[in-house]
Image 1 (tube, helix red, strand yellow):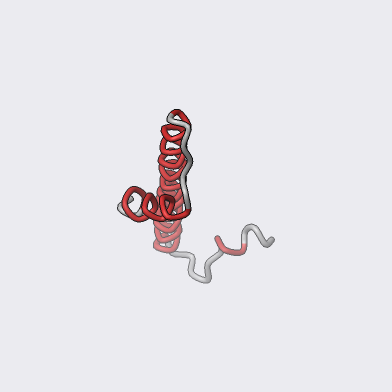
Image 2 (cartoon, one colour):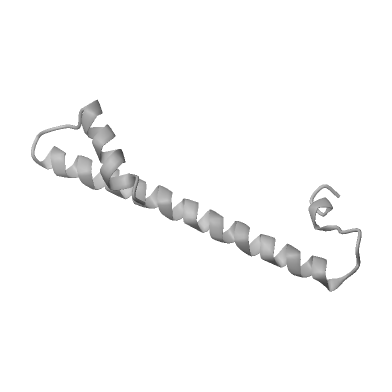
Length: 75
């Protein structure tokens, strides 16, 4: 019953079903956008760290901040 509760409506019109579909699609698009952001963020971090490891160097706290500001924030 708790799973079906958000999908029940007081009105029996087809308009409520269309609203439900729109909200479902919007939630799916939002989930995909968050997933892509997380993937791109981790790939930027990984590539940066691997590039520095190949040169026997590491990021400092200031470098992570700059990377977040200039490489990840525009995403």
